[in-house]
Amino acid sequence: MTSPSANNSPRRGLGALILRIGGAILVLGLLFYFLPVRRVGAALQLVPAYLWVLVLAGYLASHFVASLKWRLMVNLAGSGLSIPQAVRCYFAGLFSVLFLPSIVGGDIVRATLALRMGRSKAAVLFGSLLDRILDFLALALLTIAGALLVPGRLSSASRRVFFLAGAGAAILAAAVLLTLFLLPARRFSFRIRRRLVRLREAQRAMSARSHFVFAAYLLAICVQGAFILLTMVLANAAGLDLPLQVWIFAWPMAKFSALVPLTQGGIGVREATLAGLLLPFGAPAAMTVAVGLAWEGITIAGALAGGLASYTIGRLKLDVV
Picture 1 (cartoon, rainbow, N blue to C red):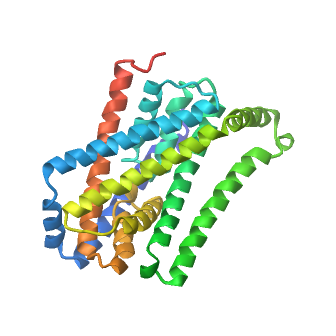
Picture 2 (cartoon, helix red, strand yellow; picture 1 turned 45 degrees about the vertical axis):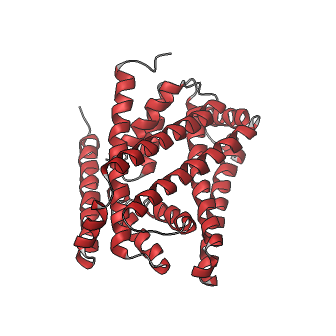
């Protein structure tokens, strides 16, 4: 007999999805209410069709590199995933973000699928966690670099806030890793201790080849940097011409804001944050929102293409080792 909680779980998930979609519609509605809709539409129409295709191709290529980076992390810990397996898991997670609150939900889907394929569950979990931490640290580094490159447009108080935020992110990441490494396993039950031992083994295997972790961090910076460049290409085509250092500063901050599960996939929140961050640099809010919506279109199309790729790999059994 199915428990009431099991029956209510899908309903709660559907209710949360509806609330997030409603939140996205509300935020976008407010943006369009206060901004000239015609100007937003005109900016989007300036982007030629071929450029949409090229940016989408660059977006998918960047995520393919990110899937190899994730595979490197989980395999350093001992998972033993092949490239087709890693690509299938990664793009399944990318597709699931369309229906889940944030990229964290996509990480869970990716790891869940990988747990069925990898040799070590601990390796998949530890490698996936470290991979996400590297992504966050890459975004933090880019944000700090952008703040340093645009000192004339930021007050000393604003720069101090962003530097403290970056330092806080680094400290938080270090605290998570230290907790995993130094957690006293003897205080837990035998079953939990056994799992912690496996995590420690994965950590030791990765520490023995720490130079690969640094290489993965460089890849994370390159991937996030590629996303910034692709957004800048869309912005230039839409008539929003801003220096690269401004995008390096504002784009990661807007991406961080989308992690808050207020709307579906951060839609609306990302655009509003980006408009606020670029306003001091002379960017009209309507054009910034147009660029944000253009990027949303790329991410949605990329997620659908990623889902199709993941399904095709599984259907054709290309990931069978």
